[in-house]
Each structure stands twice: as structure tokens, then as C-alpha cells.
Length: 115
Image: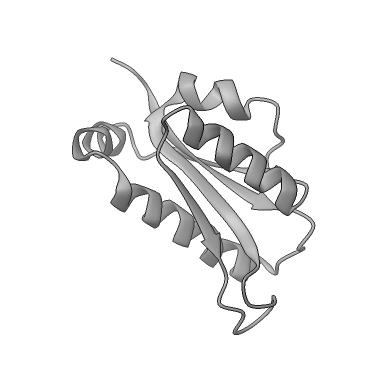
């Protein structure tokens, strides 16, 4: 059986408060799951819904990893904030990849540090 996980990419340059970061990561995670194939979600859930939050430097790096994952055929979600609290409207804060086969995700994100 393949191992599944989900990766959340979070911008470190924004220095979001912990609560805001948690909310943005949750938005990305949920949106990606809603876009995913039901059988992948079922397998991922049975495996404990593993999620890893990784750090990207800035918007440019966030978009590069997002686009690479998308081009590889993985389910992705990009979160753009409404700007009601901490950041300006339209700020891209987080992206999610998967849930998907962890080997496929690792091909793209293995060099990124943990948040």
C-alpha cells in the first residue's frame, strides 16, 4: 500500500502570528481535500491524515512549488487572503499539495525545511 500525506507550504517572510498561520494552513488543507479524489482521501484518512507544514521564503518560491506540483498532476490549493486582519488583500499566504502518494510529493518538496 502506498503512503499518503499532505504538505502545506507557508511563507516565512510574512511572519504571520501563530493563529493566522494556523487558519491559513487549515484553509489550504481543507480546500485541497475538497478537490481530491475520494479514494485518495479515504486512504489518507485511514493512514491518520498525515500533514507536514514546510517553509518557503516568499511568494515567488510559494508559486514555484505550487506550479511544479500542479504540472506533475498533483492536487493543489493556493490561498489568497481577504486582507481583513494581518495582511493586505490579495496576499498569497499558503499552498497545499495532496493528499497524494508521499513519494510524489517528496520529489517536489523534500529540500524544504519544516515550519
